[in-house]
Image 1 (cartoon, rainbow, N blue to C red):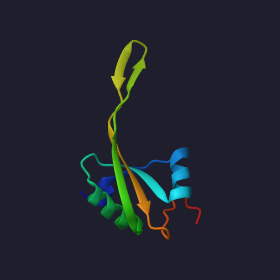
Image 2: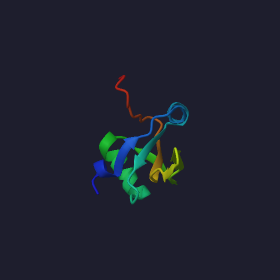
Image 3: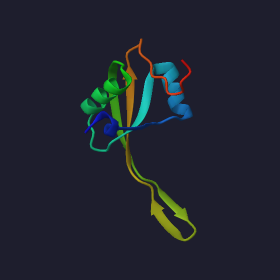
Image 4: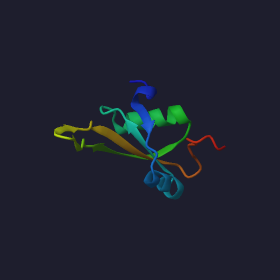
Length: 95
């Protein structure tokens, strides 16, 4: 898999913004079959930063209901990446 196939999108929420500010941790949605080593290499290649630690979790699909019809949202894999203290990723283009 290429790095662009491994990293699907960054997860930008209030909680992940706090993790970025306090712990220098960034959250990404990644490919379901990607392991921690592949995720680390992809982040380092795409963003040009040094990765200290990678934690992954599979987010299970939730049951949803619209009227009398029920369904389930898709499962996806989330990776929380801790960077070295001097490195940052700028998603918003402020710098």
